[in-house]
Length: 368
Ligand SMILES: Cc1ncc(COP(=O)(O)O)c(C=O)c1O
Image (cartoon, rainbow, N blue to C red; front, side, top):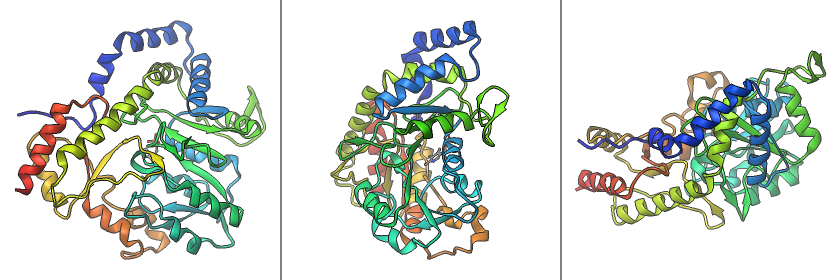
């Protein structure tokens, strides 16, 4: 039976093996393991390609979000508006800092936070709106920025799934005080281990982040702030810098693969294909379809050797870890409906047209 991986990291590695192997060797020979010159070079290159002035390499995406809340001094009880449909790290980064995530339902069009529902969630304690560019599709930043301006709120963007994505021609991560990225291995830009980054364009803020990730120090053993060890490893910096050269062509390939899925799934009545908003560049970290028969289809595809995913089966407000907040079923009906209907199909720059046709043929066979 054919086997189709959700993301084929081995074949990606083999396609750039000698460059990666050399980069790792260089780090070993330089003994530059924690932070250091390879991380610095990657930070400069990542800021550049993302149209930001500064970048700070961080040890993972969750820490990248958390360090921003440390840096803006989010206080106990300060409220942060967050979409209910996201990965748990988004609200956890707020809760871990003593803040309060306030969930808002998402839109059925792009699965992102619904700008029409944000104002109702604003209270005198609201400090931040944190849009998530879920699955690689930017949230509607124009509307979100207007609301932030009207209520004098800070914007922190969760760009963990959206490297190189654009809203109205501008790369994500540049709309507010900071943009936070994850380089978890399966991401559009993935480390060979853990990794993350914060981009920003305010030098003072960047310096603060650089210090907080080093136990709050600008100079070794002199500590200005309470901080953490959130450094990116040298080996990951070197690997990410090699992969960064390919990110534009890999993103194009993902977009072409999304077109192929649309072509070969056209006319299948029982599924809804993902909509791409007119004013964004979607980078298809995940290709998510919807169907009322999600669990049956998922089982059928898995039995036919096709790996799939569900992002995510339980919206944040109904997770056990947030039970203490008192949310209940029915609070965010769109997110709840989506969590029962969404299915993520194999997607990467490595998947071939032949494999996409195989997946689409199996989906057609299932609904016949
Ligand atoms: C939307 C979102 N936010 C935050 C994160 C956290 O990133 P990491 O896994 O690198 O800590 C992820 C990672 O999956 C994510 O998808």
